[in-house]
Image (tube, rainbow, N blue to C red):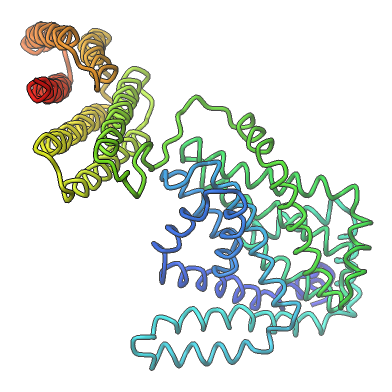
Amino acid sequence: MDILSVFGVEFLLSILPGVVLFIYGIDQFSKEILKAGSESFRSQLQKLAKTPITGVISGAIATAIVQSSTATTIIIVGLVDAGAISFAQSLGLTAGANIGTTITTQLIAFKFTQFAPIFIILGFLIDLFGGRYKFFGKPIFYFGLVFFSLTLIASAVDSYKTDPHVLSLFSHFSNPIVGLLVGFILTNILFSSAITIGLVIIFANAGLIGLYDGILIMLGSNIGTTTTALLASIKMENAAKRAAVAHFLFNLFGVLILLPFLGYFVAFVQSIGGDIGHEVANAHLFFNIFATILFLLLVKQFEAVVKKVVPTDEKEIVFHTKYLNEKLPSSTKEAIALVEKEIEYSLEVSKDLFEEVISQIRTRADKRNRIQKLEAYTDFLDQKITVALLELSKRQLTRDELDEIVALTRISNQVEHFADLAKLISITYCNLYDRGIEMSDDSLAELLKNYSIMRDNLDLLRENFTKLDKKVSDNMRSKDDELRMSIEETYNSYLKKLLKKTTNYGSVFIEMIIALDEANERIRNIRKLLEMRRDSKKLSSN
């Protein structure tokens, strides 16, 4: 037992059950809250992230509800990766999450732990007898468990507050590097800065650490809480990586800016008053408020720094319409013009999708996530365009306007099918890639040759979508003939390879060529629909 005491192991083992309950309680509470309203939680974050200030407010409220800045920031990074919000929109939410997590420490400082048994019993009873309100039971129970676990830790700590070995252990925390490292490491072990700072408040109240030491650990925990989101973003797209790095840099810069003025900051916190537990909680709150105010003043500069730290040429994908808003103009002519622009934009996204697919084949890089995201984005745009056209169809329309709406509905549907074919080519190629089969240079050259012709045809369509004249139509027909002949040559050439057994991927290559041919057929269908619109307009004007 003496050996255990010398190394502080006995002390650690005495508080460990309480810490385990704290971790379990806060983790389960977060999960229950998110389970109860995950979709509304995400949609509200998305709606309120439009400006840095509203982002800060909504991020703070969300984290205060969930009781975990780690959970909130992981959700934020996930929303960026999913295209629900942009990297720029995520910045305010992330800053707000840091403020929201201070609510937990304030509750601890105000001895909220004494009410914990009431919440545990109440939550248990609601879960047992709550009927349609049963879903409130578990969140309330786990909320009480979080604070009840702190009473267990406080009781364990109280019996060791005069132990010379424990006092010796905590005496090292006044070294700035040691204090920061303890906060950083402890937060990564416990997966929560709230738990770390809660422990600091308990130790401070017991007289084991002073305010200066407690603030150092708190600052280290603020950096440590960013690790989970950084790790989660490793396999995500660059926009999500930027959101995670922004969280890390935001907290790191805040700590580095404060350190030279730490003595003044300690004096400021002490001037507010309260016991040492309140002072630690207040330090946590004021630090995050000061850092957030600085962020709001320098948000553009901070965004630029993050972009330099995580450079990318990758275009960010955010699921929103470019021209169509929730409310269409009262003028039907103006509304139709906006729909046309949105379809043009959808064609642009579809081209980006095809470019990513061809890049994947050319470079043998795994771009499945990005390709799937772009294809989902084209589905999203088609849905929004269809909803807008359906709304327009309910108005009092002329025959010409009704014809326009029907034609645009068909065109949008063709664009969406065009994008589906890009994804089909990607899936077909990935089936080869996953089996370790590489496409030969000759086959790749054939694929690129046919794609180049199809892309030229697509560019003619995109660039002349609203002004398709006879000259452009003739050029596009010429491209159709050119691609038809090229594909015929590719078929014949590849059939010879199959007969000679000089290729090891069977008919898979032909499937990709067929998909390219079908993609061009979609372009041809759109061109014909645009020609019909053009001719119809000429007849009506005459």
